[in-house]
Every structure is written in C-alpha cells, then in structure tokens.
Length: 285
Image (cartoon, rainbow, N blue to C red; front, side, top):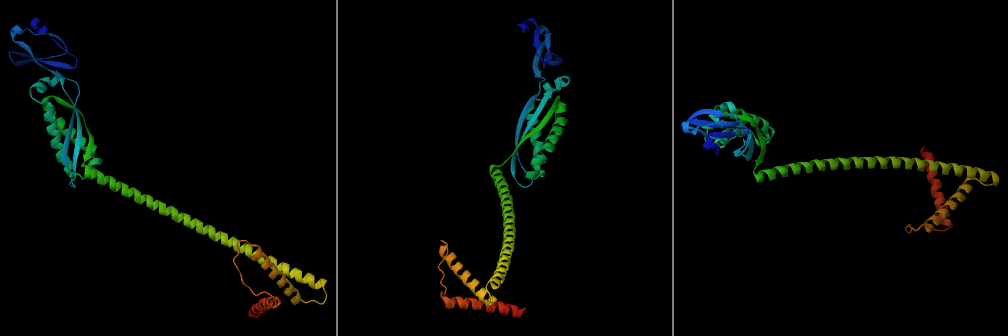
C-alpha cells in the first residue's frame, strides 16, 4: 500500500538504495520516505548495517607436512557512508571474504610448523584481519574483528600427539616414583644403621655390666669363703651360666634343636677353653 502511495519505510540499522529510472539516486536512512513512483523513483534494495559473522573453514598444510583445518570467524559490517559501494560493487560479499581468508591462511600457515601454528594463531588472525581490512574497505565494508577459533589437525596426528604427551607424562611419573623409592631406601638404610649402632652400644654396655657383676661376685665369694681361689669361683659361675643356657633353650618355643656334649667333663672342657682363650688374649696384648 505504501508503494502505491509513494511512501516507503526503512527499518533501524538498515539503509535503502534509491534509484531513479534505474540509476542510483540516494541512500535512504531509517524512517519514512516519499518516493513518487510516477517519476521513476524506486527502492533498489536494502542494506543491513548490523555486524555479521562468517565462519570460514580452511584446510591447509603446515611446514612439517601436517594437514590442518583452520576455522576463522570474521565479523564485518557495511559502512553507512559507503553504502553505495557496498550495494553495487559486490554481488556476493560472503564469498569474497571467504576467498581472501583462504588466500591469507594458505600463505601464512605453511611457513609454520604445527606447534608454532597453535602458538601464533593470534598473529595469523591479525594478518587475516589486516589483509581483509585493506581489501574490503574498497567495497564499503569494515572488518570488525577476526578470530582463529580452532585449529584441527588430522585425527591420526591428534591421536599421535596425545600418545606422545601420555608417554612423556608416564616417563615423568616413573622418574618421580624411582626418586621416591630411592629416598625411601636411603632413609631405611640410615634407620638400620642407626638401629645397629644403638644395638651395638646396648650389647657393649650389657657385656660391661656382666663383667662388672662377675668381678664383684668373685671378690665377694672369695672374701666370704676362705681358701677358695678366683679360678674356683669362675668355674662355678661358668657351670651356673651353662645350666641357665640349657634352661633358656628348653623353655623357648621357637628355638631349634641344639646338640651339645653334656656332662661334668664337658663343663670342665668348656671352662678350660674359655680360660685358655682369656690367657691367650692377655698374652697377645
């Protein structure tokens, strides 16, 4: 009805292209406009000024011969002051932008290896944005922002990378485990050494106490029983310890069978052997 009456409405964030007898006449801003169709005025089309987004998937090869798919997100919009260029100079804006993105990515990524491609994706995005800005400004479009949202290697390459990473982690874990076991063994050895040292001190003190006790017993017995010598007292002490040892062996539930000569003559032989050993040690000193 508006066209019949010569009135058109232009929505917000949109401009209309006015033509007179097929020739560009003016850019109509948002609002209501009068177009006398009888004088050859008409609306050739509308142009949105909103920011639009185009996602481009580009497959290319890195410097180390790995095929990757780079996903770029291009945000762009038409400029109101260049609406004539944006409407008339390009027939398919999205295809034009996509062609420029393909050209820049396939020129940049082959110069980098796979790891550098991931590390320098922001640099790639800036290069794409710079080239697009220079190219699309001639057609009345502004590149708002360019993002490299994803870099997808081939599935087999991705699997290999994950296996390499897993192997590295396992190697580090094994190294840490071995280091922990090493520390544990060192601490255990230090503990055993300290235990044996303290045990040796205990045995030395025990033997010292036994010697002191025997000396006191011999002196006390010699003074209490006249006519006895130190040899007689030592023989009696040895016999007493001999029978105490037999008693301990028999009373222990975990002792093994021990066969030793038993009798008065055997006790005398044991006493003689101990006494001879003491005399030889004293002579050696």
